Image: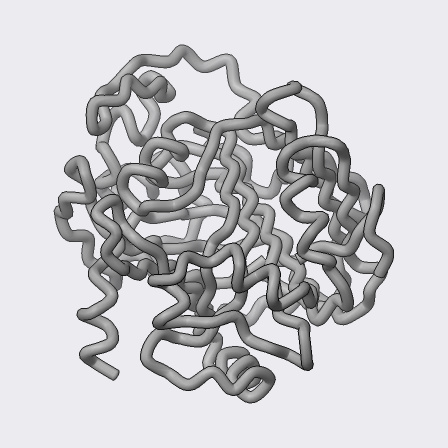
Length: 333
């Protein structure tokens, strides 16, 4: 893979009518209103799901507003009220979504440098071969969810599960078979203030607000990530629309380890129900174009290399659970 202006990429972790669109989210002129979240004045869609229900809309409302969505999976999940720096409900539901993900090798020493020492005591980057770890780059479009709609891009290090051995390729194979992946999130830009505040305050995630625009044609989908300082396109991620989509629903869990505001270790996770999906190991199936902005400057030292896997998932649902103390998980192992 060539790094520079074009590089391969690496992904581990309101519009109810956008049923199949990968269009920019949200290209809306909807009126907004301000709500308070942990002392932050946050603009949200007036009359949207979050404005009305604060992460706890009845499924009957979703069925009424989006009757084409299959809600059977969500009916088996129970929401509970939680305090995550503000009152919310766990899990957070994502009813209709799309994503593209690619996993690539990267310089393992650089990956270790980017992880806090306290986290490294419990999890380490998977070494796929000498000197090379794995990073994941995922671009999401949440078309219809408890938080209205938004786009998000995640850059993560793939790690072992806390309390489990790190056996490099063997651990990776085990996670792939069980569809239970672990990582440490490095960067997580989003394009709504609601997603940013909830992610930073409630989930201790490295989110910031910037433009994330989506383009598509017959053959590919592309995410343009704007540099928040200059307002110019910094990173472009293009992924192929793969043929041979499987319609067999499968559950995948993506978990992350990090620290809370008190410096204590925590973990969180999302379970996704993939309704339409395909994968490829072809190096031509995904491409990353790097510019001169801050995210590109962060990615370049990772020395991205061979692509291990690309995933095209045009239809999935998800449930994101509130973070918990890591000690409660390790004690179960």
